[in-house]
Structure formats: structure tokens, C-alpha cells
Length: 178
Image (tube, rainbow, N blue to C red):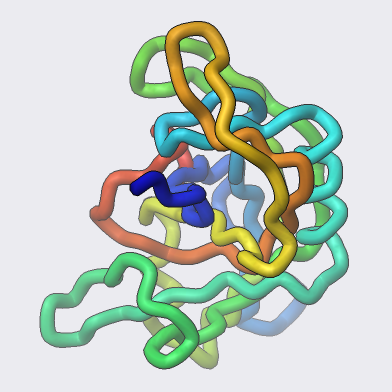
């Protein structure tokens, strides 16, 4: 049975955290996703990428995660029962090229993210951790199609539900890290 991809484990940190005013809130840029064929079997077309960018740029998209104090590490996708909101996606900053681990340069959708560093001490350990984009299941439309020699789920509609800190877990987008 094929599963429609809703988790996109990858991102790349584009900047060091910048302190906002006198507070301990930090802002940084994160490369979140690429278009077209991806390692998790998804295919994001241009119009769907724009739809996803618009959904994440409303100031309502959380940065979530579960920091396990016993292992001193981040868990992968835990869902809302265990996850805390460590910040939010602020704005779409544009497309920037990054070289993936396969050596291919791809354009990543880059967003500015605000982290609550003072409230959550573990938020200070997010930089350098892998990131996953999570899609809202209720917004997903599309179908399976063969593109070249690979079968993909080709999205015709989708929106971003949140960004998730996944620690050492392997991301879908190979350089996707806070």
C-alpha cells in the first residue's frame, strides 16, 4: 500500500539566529522544501509550491517538536499530544540555491522563523537540527503518476501545517536543517 507523503524531513538553516530587540526571542532563516521530485515520493509542482508558501506565510504556522530530556535529543514526528510550539514561521524570504548531499544544487523555499528561546530553553538547541515540513492532511489533493522512471504522488493542492524539529532523524530534503 502506498502512503501519501505528508512529512518532508529536511530543511537548511540559512542564517544564525538574530536576537529580536531586547528579548531572548530569536529569528533565523530556514530552507524548507524544493519543488518537483523528492526523496519521499512526492512531487511538488510550481503552483502547489506557491500554494504551500501562501499557507505558511500567514503567521499561524508553528515550529513544533518534542525534546526528550532523558536522551537529550529531539524525537521525530510526535503529533500534537507530545509536541511543543517553539516558535512560528514569520515570512517567505524567497528561493535560494543549496547543494544537496547528492551533489545537486536545488532551489529551496526559504522562510524566516521566530523561536521562543527564553521560554523554552531547549529552543536554544534547535539550530543545527534537522527539520521536517508537515502538510495538513485535510488540504491534500493529487494522484500517483510516473515521471521519468519514478512513481510520485503529484500534489494538485496542499498546505503546510507546521515545521517540526526532528533532530538526528534523516530528512526528506537532504540539507533541510535549522
